[in-house]
Image (cartoon, rainbow, N blue to C red):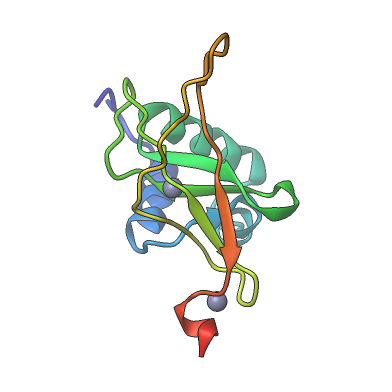
Length: 126
Ligand SMILES: [Zn+2]
Ligand SMILES: [Zn+2]
């Protein structure tokens, strides 16, 4: 990976992603880090980590941007073709470890797929 030097802010951000399996929204991250860095820094670090292949982003309901740790990506090969799940009851968002086959469509160059599944998570089904 092309990561040379990491600032304290970058390390802090990464440790948040590494501590859990859940995805985090931009709003959530800004709120969580408000005593350590400003909003602009949060955005800048997220952009950088995404470019490096450490995290990936996707859209949730209402167009909210979410970020999650990448399990198999590198900066050169983004491997994000998996669906995301958003619980309508508790708002939890997570990556689903299943592959979505990309349809090959004539005359179209498909570059990304954004699949959001919504419903109830394990905790909310009871
Ligand atoms: Zn839930
Ligand atoms: Zn994901």
